[in-house]
Image 1 (cartoon, rainbow, N blue to C red):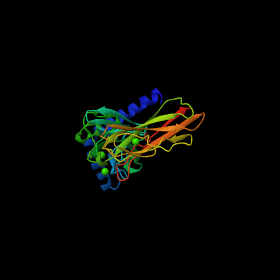
Image 2: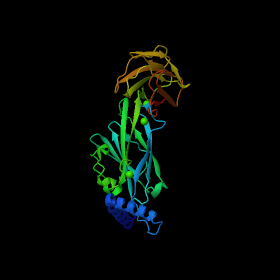
Image 3: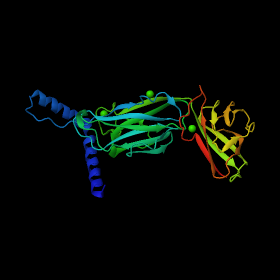
Image 4: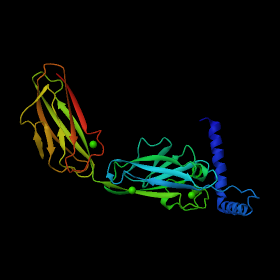
Length: 323
Ligand SMILES: [Ca+2]
Ligand SMILES: [Ca+2]
Ligand SMILES: [Ca+2]
């Protein structure tokens, strides 16, 4: 965008702001004139009506309830129910602490931290057309990685992009006469909220290491599997699956670790791992290859009946050892 376009946008925004500013009285006068025009059978041309921005959809269908740590995709629709163009529109959201705007959010949405979480500002690339003719919809992806099990509540508001409120002023408490609402007659439909239930979950992460490296053919490698519980719930009953490649042979009875039970190189944890805690076990494997590289991956999986793992890209770990 060149500077002239930016300047034009600002001027358009200022112009819209001025129009919005007089809509309290102006809208009533306009409606009266319009009604009068109808009464006269169209003999008098109707004056322009005000814009009526509204947040017509703020839903979490398909994502409520959801395991804590998951990304919730909120459906957002912004509309203009009245006859005048609004000028540039902003949709704002207050995200509670422990949640964050996900990286795959629309490029026109940005977040800043606040005392209670974060304020997301979405500067809509196009304004919804008057009279509900072209509502603007998008999805707001919100990470819940640090949120506790229970309810999270998000507040949203739509208004005029040239009069953004202080991010520290909660949207739920913005008064009807806040400049952000542009003097609209109906501000009750500018705000909405959504509550989502976060259920128990354990985001487990596996890190696997091996020693020595390199190893001589016919020698033994000691593998160490470390599982960290990144929460938000206590973890138990998970299994690390390590299927050895043909170049390795499990050394019988070599697996050891407190509160683990073993089937070959696979370990199931029977204790309780608090949030932020880590547990590990070791086993040995004999190298049956004479040379080359031994690649040995493993994966941690939650047990049957246990809370799910909402983030699985950290569940696998692989080690390569030179022979
Ligand atoms: Ca409105
Ligand atoms: Ca909900
Ligand atoms: Ca995980």
